[in-house]
Image 1 (tube, helix red, strand yellow):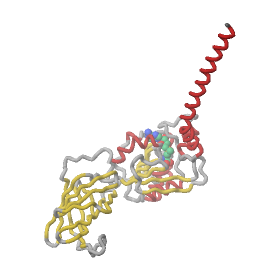
Image 2 (cartoon, rainbow, N blue to C red):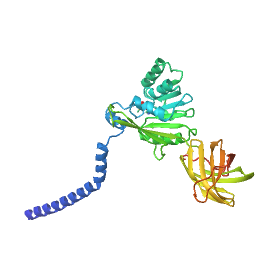
Image 3 (spheres, rainbow, N blue to C red):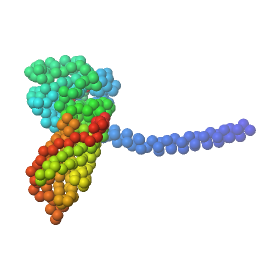
Length: 341
Ligand SMILES: C[S@@+](CC[C@H](N)C(=O)[O-])C[C@H]1O[C@@H](n2cnc3c(N)ncnc32)[C@H](O)[C@@H]1O
């Protein structure tokens, strides 16, 4: 009986053990994709700052939870070049470390700027270096949280921050003055396609891959919505009605002229500069209409050109007639700039 009980217990135990083993195997199989991703991420070269964050995780944490990793000098120069920083610019470096970005902008490009940094020792080092190089009147450093910094004076914002901070910053960056350039070292802004990117070789860096990636965005004006304007053509005043759809700097839509409408071709938006063209069929034949101008104080101001399109080559316009000034106003004045444009 005891033996039987024993064997029964053994039998039940063996059954439970097999079930546990099957369940563990299922769990292992389910976890396989995640493990594979983790393994790939582990062997892939991560941006230097992520690598540095890992390395510093066991050490004293940095004040903002972002490790201090200076941008290598060739990368600093490339960032300033990508943003075309010049004498008229005001550069704000968010999390300025030892101040090198703003100091270099002042020293080699005649710009003015501000660096904000949580670590007081780095702020001191930055101001000392700016004085030593004779640029202290144009390069200032303050101990300040970047989230409590007024960004409105910036014509250029530079960033070398971890993605979670960029996610928080993005809505504020999008509300900056149209035309403001934003350059980020190694980390993109989620969902906002960069206007340009660059790669800089950094063969001797201590962390991460031997290169840095740079991203440039130009803050677009808010032009989404319905617009109506007029232009003169062959002595007649004509109305154009524009329906614009905007996703950050990407624009598309249609234009209606003299009762005919057409989809926009080659529509571009860079800062406050808007350009588009459309081929419109009307009583006077097939015409290519083009607008080139700017969004200024809630109006579209620019030049309108019209050119006849040769029937044989549908898209090839003949020489355009002289450009005429034009101005358009919103016809949906209630439209508000969305938080995410
Ligand atoms: C990766 S370093 C970049 C330094 C410098 N911008 C450069 O490119 O050489 C990031 C810096 O951001 C600072 N930081 C992190 N969070 C911050 C915050 N909330 N406000 C201001 N500075 C911050 C860190 O102390 C660190 O010095």
